[in-house]
Amino acid sequence: MLKILKLITFMVIAPFCGTVSAQQVVSLSSLLKEMTDTRAVTYWPEHSFTTKQVSSYDRKSVSPDQPGWYSNSDFSQYIRTEEKSGRSENVMLDVNGPGVIVRFWLTTFKRAGTLRIYLDHQDSATIKIPSYDLLKGELALGPALLNPHSSYQKEEKGGSTLYLPIPYASHCKITWEESEQEKQPRYYQINYRSYTPETRVITFDREQLNMERELINQTEKRLWNEQTDKRGTGNYLKQKLPAGKTASLTLRSGSSAIDLMQIKVMAQDPSQQEQALRSTIIRISFDGKETVWCPVGDFSGSGVGGKPLKSWYRTVNAGGEIISRWIMPYKKSARISLENISDVPVDIELTTFTDHYDWKPSSLYFHTSWRQNRREPIFKFDAPDAAELNFITIFGKGIYMGNSLSVFNHMHTWYGEGDQKIWVDGDKFPSEYGTGTEDYYNTSWAPVVLYQTPFANAPRADHEDSFGYNTFTRTRNLDRIPFHDFFKMDMEMLGWQQGEADFAVTTYWYGAMGATNNIKDMKAEAKASLPK
Image (cartoon, rainbow, N blue to C red):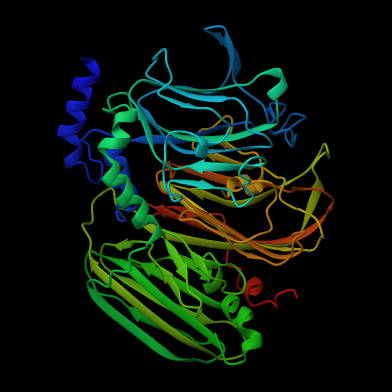
């Protein structure tokens, strides 16, 4: 009877769920709609939540000031093992609600065993998967909401990432059961939201998969077929931009948002195209404050070279056109500039479409920050002491939306053993502690291949051994991270051998007026010749 009442409540409320508001409940339906509500990310969440992660990181990592901070045995680490109905289950996540699982990444060698997801203290698992592989279960989702990793093998090594939201009202526990004979290294990352106690959440159950199948299919389709709606006021700029010069567009005044931006930068000498994309800077000011300063190629998520990219927020097509679907709101005014800091002219095209935006006290400005570190030391993964590369540190209120990592690897071996560490507000231990660079970018097993998914991509991979240029990008949707006054993301500099690599990091985030970060003008780095 309780389940029937819950389903009736869900059916009554679900049709009215769009962008989540304080008067509505959080449900599978509302969360799926939130995923494709492009303007939802521009507002501070009305249902306040924090975003955290549990993972299989090496438990010898306790504190930056204690030995073991860079330990690298990031597998088969659990909260505890508990006995249940005559079997042993390793607990991966145990958290009180209300909340929602927003990303579940895992990988292994061989997959034998049983994965269980328990919701609201129920004795039996709501989701039971007979494998360490989310693709093997009963979810039956498309590759936008449940994608196999680029290294995925049907029967053996590889992993998968789940983006279908799994809400719960009071509690969530995820466990893994395996026999002694089945034991393998098990890697996992589980990102989840925790809402304030008064938030009403409808707990996920399997019946909802059938009830919401049409919405699930619509969400899947839309995440793979990005919208390029050309609504509102259009602005267009096309010209030859001499060395050292800037061209600008002033957009419509009043409460508005850039819904779509198309950019094309072409060197007159094709051999200079990569340099042109690095040395042409996009600068955007909103309400008198510049919040975007970034090389055009890096802004696109494609890194060096303008390689094709197909993702939810950005596209780079085969002709080199960059399409940005980041929603960029402003209250009164906005100005976009393209600045050529190179020594040769480039041809530019810039098109924007702006439309009315409902500016609220919770509205946030779009930011893009860029930095480059050349010849960054890479430490062998078993070294007792290593170092971390700071992607960005932000002061003030905002929401972190992701990054792009463009690497020139000077070594003929993998550089990406390092874990991400994300500190939010008053953290005593990182809100996110990862298991490896490629794991953060939704794949596994040191990939050097191209892949495209809505929220994670590798648009460039020059060499099978990772030498030369590599680009990874991951943007966040339901797994975005709100912060009240502080955000910091670092990545450990660990590889298979000691060596060096160049790292160019682009970060995307929304911030309140007055939010700042630690990245200074890097015009000299953007103008410097690219390594060959």
